[in-house]
Length: 224
Length: 203
Image 1: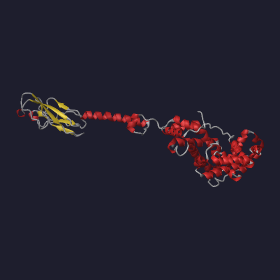
Image 2: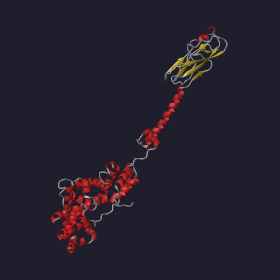
Image 3: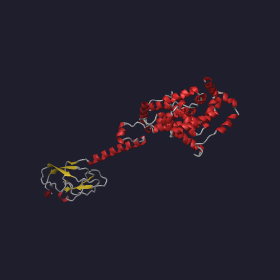
Image 4: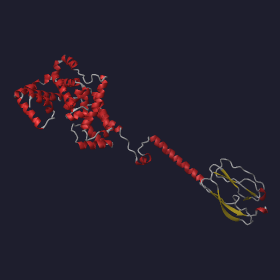
């Protein structure tokens, strides 16, 4: 090992980058060469000198870094919110508003369903539609007839029901108001001369509402 | 919060980074405690400004928080990874400061340094002022030389690790380190003459 080769590798030796036989040969040269040893001492001294330098401690860094970490973490999502929205995190006010709307919608749907699924039973006296036989007997007789009402929302459906009305000769026709709700409105005098009057105005039958009508057979229509 | 400069072993590094991905604050704190001083030290010595060093170190750890997946234990150590991130941020800062890439590699301010310190020779006798002198000498080095000397002398990275951090060839790292040491030895020669004498005493 000569001086040129040694000086080229002195820094690597100081920095711990050499090992094995090559390192040993340089170290042996440094033991016998004062000039190369001087260079090595100079570099070692420089390293020691540089490491005496101290730096000021950071002041706000710790707080800032920890705050940054916390602010970047996603808030925990409740399992039930996770089921509904998946990983999406909804702002609380929006979630509350949607919840209120959902409850209101459910209540409204319940009310409408309740309204539409009402079964109307006309106990007495009643007769419905053309298929229902006209009373012929003077003996009161109860007969139950099921009347199926077509289901068309918001449409007024009129059925004719014959009702015994012995003491009233005159009847009047009453038109069902558009906003009437499931009311049975006696009206129409299409057969007033034989003592019956007709009409039932029904609104809002949905879905598949059924009407039960009981027929009281009293007199024959012809007898009137 | 207690800080240490002890390097975590590769398995620990990988485990802690995996926990950071899941938002584990304890794991993050452990990494922060282990690497804060070394990252901050590197950045401070590159910028010689406390506020800037804090800002850049803050950004380095934010990068780790936001991109834990970028660290791959098999490819480098966590220290090398963090120093690499810090190095990029520092170089961007220095480029903005110089406002041009022209002269970035060649910047050397020793003439101004000598003029600045000539008027106060007694100051060098005090340790604090010696430290300031060293700091100023390092700051006067061109950035590419400064980073290798800081990574070697203060971060104690190997040549290979320095090459990874600076994205340079091993030979370039050695050459820059040599030039930086020559420049510093010249500027600080007054403080290293006694060592030479020791060498001659041995022979």
